[in-house]
Image 1 (cartoon, rainbow, N blue to C red):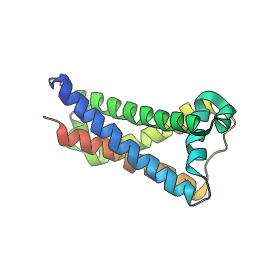
Image 2 (cartoon, helix red, strand yellow):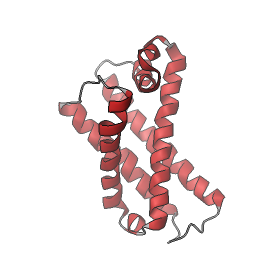
Image 3 (cartoon, rainbow, N blue to C red):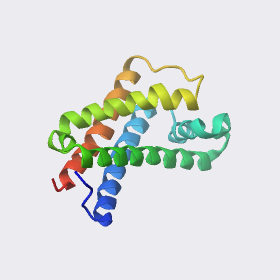
Image 4 (cartoon, rainbow, N blue to C red):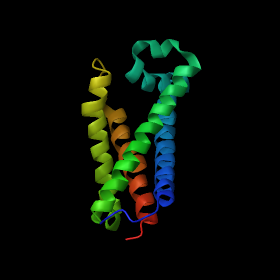
Length: 156
């Protein structure tokens, strides 16, 4: 299916999909790790450390802000990829629940088996409840949320 929607429509879909998914996902991370004693600034610095290394933990609010920005870049990228795929494969909007959950699982696997090992080669693997939370959060808050927004505003 060709992209027939005007640019303003595409921007609105991507804006809302990325914003909602990114906000839900970072909220989950802040609450989950906050309950385990990780301060919000430290969690956000950990995200930025994937780009700038250990110096991120010495950068204060600046590197925490960079971590938040990077988080939303990733969320918006995931939204853009799903949107573009949905224009080509209508299945993604017709069966958005299953497709969104599977897309979220794919995003999780891509991030944790390709991106993070390249950015943080010495990172310890998640285990137990952190692993379950991580997988479910990305499936629900990234994958499903993006697929729901894209399906809701698609004109198939």
